[in-house]
Image (cartoon, rainbow, N blue to C red; front, top):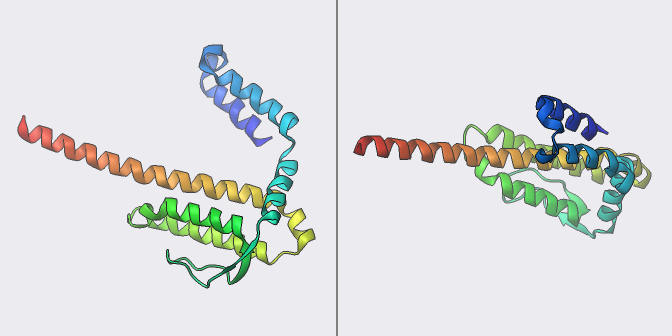
Amino acid sequence: MQSVTVVSEGLECFGGQGYIEDTDLPRLLRDTQVTPIWEGTTNILSLDVLRAIRKSPLKSVASSDQQGFASVAGAAPKVLLNFRQDVLSRIAPAREKRSLQKEASKLGTAMDAVLSRWTGLDKSQQDMAARELAFSLARIYMDGVTVTLTCCVQEQTLKSSCQQLKISTWS
């Protein structure tokens, strides 16, 4: 129910405008409140994530990968490895920027920690940690998107500054 609190606070930030139907914000609040009824609680949704992970075949993992992050030795579900690879490929441009290297490195480390912890759990422990796993994966993905967007914004700002400089020199 964290989403209900976040959306409610978001509406409050807009004041009276947040409740006007033309803004689509009231729809977000309604949808947020009924989604657990339609889809199930986060625990139920987490068990769906767990079921999908368990259906995924195991794949052996090398001790490191081509992107330089340490990896989990042994075997891990292929879907988690694909997820990891997707996140790492998204943040690859950020690893080249000095201002974002620390954040990109933390994401790689966090993903490896999730994989390492996951492969060390037995089935009953996985059941109990399903919600934590789903939330961890969601946070890692959101952080990866944020780092990627930050990288893009920095590039756009730089391009815009260069354009401004070119325009001012010819004026």
